[in-house]
Image (cartoon, rainbow, N blue to C red):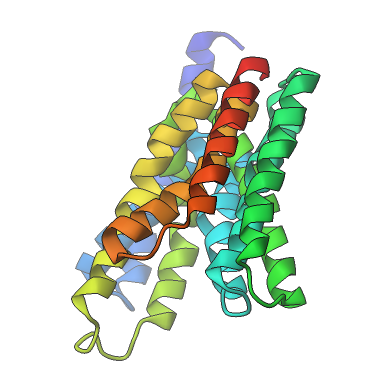
Length: 276
């Protein structure tokens, strides 16, 4: 079929589809107001258009891993274990990211990289275990699942970022998960917002804007440009940076052992970067 015939055929299909618009609108206004119908049709079409504009399967993996899976599973796990105990598993996240970087991103780090990566992971896990408190099998299983999903989401998102860009990937992933998350938010919203402290609103604002969006813009760009396995090792520093912030902002004590282990972890990050 030549281009002219193809154009006429496509135009005819479009007109056939459009011809049903007014009858469908007539039926719809029997149950919905014109304003709601106009806005709702745009929202539904936008969500479907978002799915068509990008790699739906890969974006679904990103959304499942970092938008839904990791936050939900860690929140459930922290009902059974302490935050200190959870750091044991966060210390394994760079290793999980590197493994999925090999499987999904096609990367091939040198053998020495895995040595530094394992030593760094064991250093963080060992430090956290020393301060972990009691063990909960349920909490451990939830944290292990969270780390696996997050590592997969990081690697998949970084691979997509090479084609789409970091901010595009997380934006599409958030948009893809919006219907589910908006419904869940409405169903679980507190009955009243009057008694919620300003600190809670501040925390919600931070995790919403920075943890869920701005951080991923930089993170996916870094993984895409610097390599999933190598840049992923920077996560080894996250527990110690978090503890330092807790000391500065919440005036929690910083133990000398934390400084020593942080120095060892930094050495492992440098070594992993060298051989990634």
